[in-house]
Image (tube, rainbow, N blue to C red):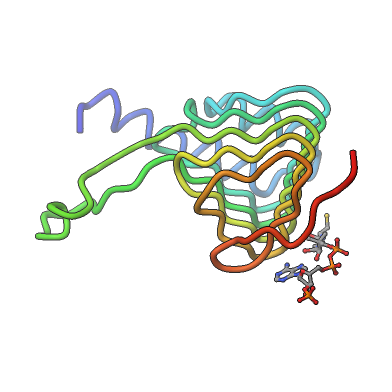
Length: 152
Ligand SMILES: CC(C)(COP(=O)(O)OP(=O)(O)OC[C@H]1O[C@@H](n2cnc3c(N)ncnc32)[C@H](O)[C@@H]1OP(=O)(O)O)[C@@H](O)C(=O)NCCC(=O)NCCS
């Protein structure tokens, strides 16, 4: 890890994320996540205790009119941070995450690296999303599977 990346990580974790997670005002929360580097569109609601990846927030893009309910987690990298044989199977990797316009991530949803959630899609409470979600599709469960399609 380079010194500049370590400083960025420290600031993201100790300042922006901590402030954002507990901030009582929606617009300020969104502003703090933007300062952390997450690309967030217009008219976006982010609930309390939402975790955006602090290693690579710049890989996360949230469209317009998106609702991200409390306690969601959006992850854009994977890495075991210690020397372990597992690194042979799971080398450090990062991948972009995109949340389409009008989508809703219900409370406690987890979005994994590389996933695109389509426009006006819904991710059910507590779902773990491992694959792309189509537009106007409702997914739920662990791993998330489509449960219905909405007529736009
Ligand atoms: C995703 C959600 C909006 C879907 O609502 P809905 O369209 O009314 O869905 P339904 O109740 O018709 O459920 C359809 C199927 O998906 C299942 N399902 C729905 N939500 C689920 C979830 N979170 N986890 C697992 N399965 C779920 C239902 O059990 C049902 O399965 P069945 O057909 O086998 O009976 C809703 O279930 C949900 O998760 N709401 C969370 C609300 C929230 O986050 N509030 C926070 C404040 S913003």
